[in-house]
Structures are given as structure tokens and as C-alpha cells.
Amino acid sequence: MADSSTSRIADVALDETSIVRWNPDVDHERRVAIYDLLEDNHFEPKSGITGPFKLKLRMEDTRLAMDIQSMEGKLLETIRVPLVPFLRIIKEYFVVCESYNQAIKTASRAQIEAIDMGRRGLHNDGASLLRERLADKVAVDDNTARRLFTLICVLQIRG
Image (tube, rainbow, N blue to C red; front, side):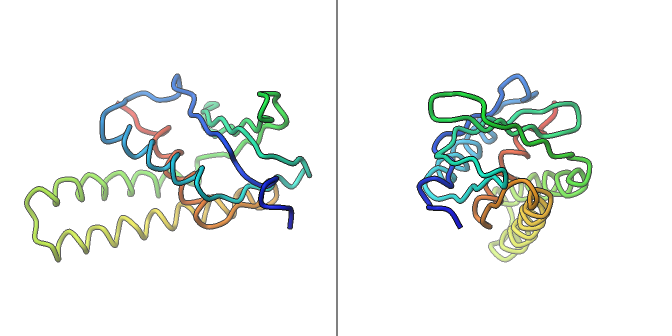
């Protein structure tokens, strides 16, 4: 395993042209995921390139493109991940998130906690699938996969 200072994301950005709908809740989730990702992550490309890295996430048709750049901005590698296997999880995740946002306004604590458990479970499923799909391209830990899955969801929000 490489040194933690060379196997990490030091900066991340989303291609804003890939985002169809932007609202305060989405912006908050994006900012929190990016903050948490930059605080603690493991990102080790299997190609052997070393970081720290700048990472730009963008959509290419039905694929996620992850542009891995040097800290100077030089493109080192692009990893593409088909998103079709994620679509069911993302759709269910959005439905549960909407239920959660409605529940926090009127539901009992027990109802909110039950919905939140479902939300977390779907989020974990998405992160696990992401780790599996990235396994031959880049090694990431669980928390990095969770935060990247959040950012993928932001890119998938449609009007």
C-alpha cells in the first residue's frame, strides 16, 4: 500500500455543466461530502500514478468520468465507470431521501430513525457497488466510496 500522502485526493470538483438542478439542499450535501472527502480519504490508482490528486467528476452520457490530475492541473488519467448498475440504487436513494426530508417536518422520532436507517443502507449499497466497480482501476476505502457516491448522486439529479 502506498504512502497516505501520495494516495489521496487533495482537491475535488464537480463539472457544473453536468448538474441539471441545483438547490440549497443539494448544495449543502455537495459541500459536506467534499469537505469530509478532503479531510480523510484513500485514493490509489492501480496504474501506479502517485498523488496527491485533484479529481474532477463529470458525466459522459451514462458514464461517470473521473479526471485524475496532478496538483498542478495536468491530466494524469481518466477513469470511466458505467452508471447503469447504479441507477436503481440512486433512484431508491432519492425516494428515501425525499421521504426523510418530509418526515423531519412532521413524523415521530421513531419514524424518522427508520427512514434514516433505510437511507443509510441504500447509501452503503451504492458505496459498496462503487468500490466493486472501481476495484480494478483505483483502491478506495469505505468512507471515500461513500463520499464519492454522494457526489455521483449530485451529478444524477434531474429537474
